[in-house]
Image 1 (cartoon, rainbow, N blue to C red):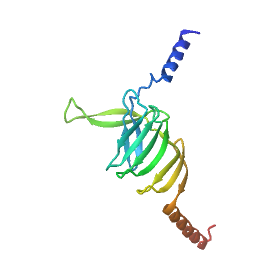
Image 2 (spheres, rainbow, N blue to C red):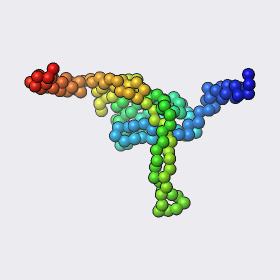
Image 3 (tube, one colour):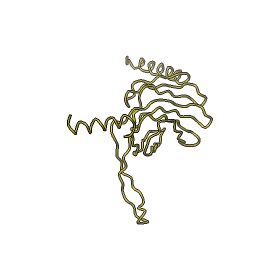
Image 4 (tube, rainbow, N blue to C red):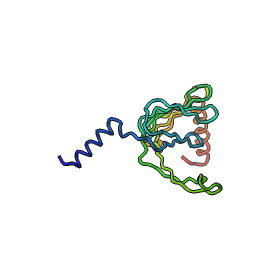
Length: 175
């Protein structure tokens, strides 16, 4: 065994024991119509973290690693579960340019490049109304939406809409 092999083996052993878990980049996830940044500092602590989003809504994130794999639950200000699902690791880091005020030259600004991880939705995501009743589920496969299932009133609205569209299509000779 040569020296290169020993170093690679040593580095893989270290990373498996968590010594290589440096969480220095933020993890960015989409929350509704806005974007929420989760900043995970140096050494990761893989336990539940609560992040307030807006207006009393909050999310509990169960972080699995530094690249964004996590389980997330979002609640309203009355502590009613609104959504829950899993994220898998981002493929790679993303970069964006941000204009910030230059602290050393007041009145001037500079462009900086920020790097971040953006994890992908995966598996079943379940959404609830403000009373905790299931509204719909989405089935995701590494960031790709494959299926949506509607429940309750949303499913009834969809059925009525489909019937109307089928009747209209029939009137116009469309099958």
